[in-house]
Image (tube, rainbow, N blue to C red):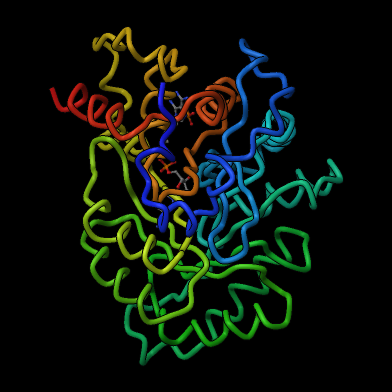
Length: 318
Ligand SMILES: NC(=O)c1ccc[n+]([C@@H]2O[C@H](COP(=O)([O-])OP(=O)(O)OC[C@H]3O[C@@H](n4cnc5c(N)ncnc54)[C@H](OP(=O)(O)O)[C@@H]3O)[C@@H](O)[C@H]2O)c1
């Protein structure tokens, strides 16, 4: 099986920090549910070279009522090598639940905490930066931390108004990385324009085997500018009408999925997403231990190469 670095250009490989190999394979001794031998797949954040495991967790369904379970899920995720927690000030109780869990666990520094700032208004002129500052202060308070690893402008709202603030907070050490998020194809052209305009570390964007539009718009700019890419809604989104993972019920997983260490559709779909050369990691949303374990399993073993990615897409499309 060829690794995907074999089809990257040398320039792309350098930008992704893959010149020394596809990933850091150093955590291969981590136990995972049913296969202790598969190495962990990591990729580098282009702006610094810091490594991240290619699957994290999305938290827009986290609730305080479920806090003991969430604490157990996050602890286990970390044991399996997952560190990236994707939240937002707009996700109701998500930040407070994460803050409570990591403080109780005493594990703040073992996680990469990403949140999103609420611009509040589509109309940038009405907004000023006030809502943004309040949103950020509230995030720090709820997450019980004095800094975030990553702060993104949520859904690109008031990007021009908020970006100077994010840059100021980065200089002051209140955030380590900055970026912009969206989950709509209709935003991709504008997102690509912001990626050319601002010195972003990250963008977060919707992409999946069933919706590959970002390959044409966002990913080429990310590779060119050296911007890390987090993928949201890798299964289509938590709402039933969008969650295409539900439609895999009567489709048989191809036997050749075992060649890329996939034993389930969720692993197959995540491996497709994280194997794109522009993609740094995916953040599937779940509150369930079993689903989290299966998702982190996709960040282990062989990553599909270009030929395998074509085969996967063709199998899905058929
Ligand atoms: N604009 C933005 O910035 C934006 C927008 C949307 C989402 N996001 C972020 O992206 C994250 C992911 O999006 P999402 O949660 O809406 O959609 P998603 O990750 O595509 O799908 C989540 C759904 O998949 C199910 N699921 C997860 N893992 C599974 C597995 N292994 N097997 C079977 N089902 C599984 C979950 O059910 P269970 O809960 O039952 O596991 C949930 O219903 C969010 O949590 C959020 O952090 C960002």
